[in-house]
Structures are given as structure tokens and as C-alpha cells.
Length: 348
Image 1: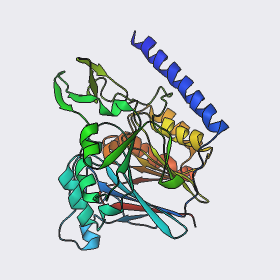
Image 2: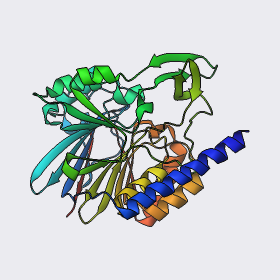
Image 3: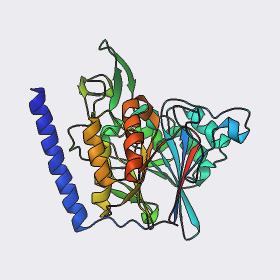
Image 4: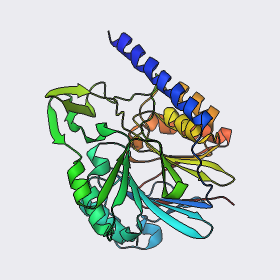
């Protein structure tokens, strides 16, 4: 029975993927090429400075090199500051908003980032460690006579979620409240794909699931991928999850994802399909457990020059080890992002 369900899921995912590809090939969304993209991990699980600074990354959270007395705050979740520059003008958005509002607000101060510069927020999916700090972030932005646009993939993001433990116990609930978000100064845009910041970025909306080797329900039925619907507890595969895509001039796509429950390869292919751009310069986000050989085989076909793992990627050491071994032989580099890791990608 499980085999039949899996086949049906993959079959319909493939149909949706083909349809999205047909749409994209017919009328791709035109992303304006940009001169520079700066990505700063503002909120994350780990402050320990994994890796050294180089021409791509500066480890701003490393107290040994910065001379700071204390490190930034850390908590489980993800929040990323994104700056996009074109023709000398900088635009700013936030990708995910962490879980704890106090950590988000304190790390704005720690890294010298003014939340009032944020023009839009994209939320990858409806897990509380990606939207929990949203209300306080909106208050910190202090929008004047306007709502801050907030993007997410589908209404599944607002489902009531639970954690299912090893013993089958349910802990929760957690729910992303539309009402609280809009009351705090946000204007929700649900679905996609959508262009952001006057065409400088793209939010993919829901990503079709077509691979069979990436585990979208981690832990074999336990974990976060649980929701309540009409009083019944159901497993789900995060259908709302979306990614942020930017077109870096002369380089290719920069793709940001959250936990990447919908699959790393699926996410990158959807970015290619929607934009008509095949070159992927940088990929930033977590990844799920997968058949290592099949995943690497497909990633070598897409061949992102820079591959960055963050958030819950660190609990997949086997995959990280394989990436660090295979990627350099193929002109690719793996980086691990922690809080304070600032990646700068330039078109020059």
C-alpha cells in the first residue's frame, strides 16, 4: 500500500513539474540581472565559526577574529538577511524569521542591521522555527502607513502543526496565525510564483516533488511533518514550501531555500524552469536525507558553483562529507553557514 501511495505521489508530482515547466518555457518570469547579492545568516542553530573567511564568506560571528566579547545569540531555526544591489542601489529582504523573537531582534543589533530597511519577507514554509519571530520583526520594521509584503507558498503554511516523537506522542500545537501577522503590519501573499522587489527576486511558490530518493518526511513518520485537519492528525510533505531566486549578472541563479523538505534537486530545477536560466551559481539552504549517490549524480548535472548548507543540514554528516569530497573535483565548493556567516556574490 505504501508503495502504491509513493508511486501516485511521484506521478502527480511529475505531472505538476511538467506543467510548471511548460508554463515556464512558454513565458518565463523575467528576473532583472543584479550586480551583487549579500546573504547573512542572522538567525540559526550554531554560532561556532565553522570554516574560515575567504573571498566569498566573512565569518562575522567569530569572536576570535572579530575581537567581540560575546557571540551572537543562537536558537533552532532560520532567518537570513538578503541584500540585492543593482546600478548602485541596494534593496533588502528577509528570508524566514526564526522562532524566537528575542533572538531575531538582538541579532539585528549585534550585526548592525536596521530592520527598517526590510522591504519584503519570504517565508519558506509553515514550521514555527521559520515564522515564529515574524510578529516582532514586523514591529521592528515600523512600517509607516503601509503593509510589509510577506510571501509563502500555499495555505498549508497555516495548518496546525505538531511534533511526533519516537513513542508516537504529539507535542504542540503550533500555528502560524494570518490574523496576528496582518495585525502586526504584514500583508500576506499566498501562492506563486511571484516576482518581488520590482523583479529583482522571485518567490517560487510551491515546489513540485518528483524525485523518489530525497526523504521529504524525515524520521519515517515522526518529526515536524504533521498537521491537524478536521480533527484528524495527518502526515504531510510540506506542499507550501517555496524558495527565493535571484539572477546574478554573468553568473547565474542564486537560490535560497529553508529546510528544503521538497528536495534540493526539485528546488533547483523549479528555479531553472520558472526563469529559463540553467546556470546555478549559488545554492543556500538545508537539505534532507537522501540516497547519496543519486543526489550527487543530479547535483553534478545542475552543477552549482557554490553549495552552502545551513540550519538542519548539520545533522547529515554523511552527505556533507560526500559533498566536500566530490564537489571540488567538479569545480564546486561546499560551505557550511552558521550565524554571522556573510556570503557576498558579485557579478564581476
